[in-house]
Length: 171
Image (cartoon, rainbow, N blue to C red):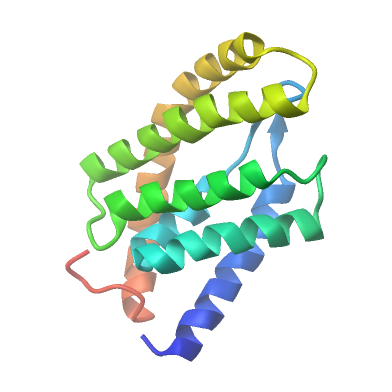
């Protein structure tokens, strides 16, 4: 893929991603349901590890600048990069149902449950136990739905990605 095509594709994904970040379903003051994971997983399946991680870091900063919600905290930016690293490890050039399950489950446990509970404890007024006890049920309930949603989205978009030359048929 040419550098120009890569940059344009990433910019389009970033624009969609920032828009996805503005729409969410609030669960509590510190928990919300979003669909931005669909973009993150797609990018990690299409682009190499380094590009995916860099995208995650930059997108988090751009999203905060365009649509700030709360105080800026570098931990969330680093967690976005970590999410992309995990997704890329499992999905780059090997999108299978097993890898989708491993990728989404890993991000849910490491980032959504553990890191976000730690970050919320640092930034907000309640203790770690409060945030983790809220996060575990939400993530356990959403996990199968998110996996199924990504499988449906990926299978729908995969032919378009192939036609655009973003991925090969073997993926």
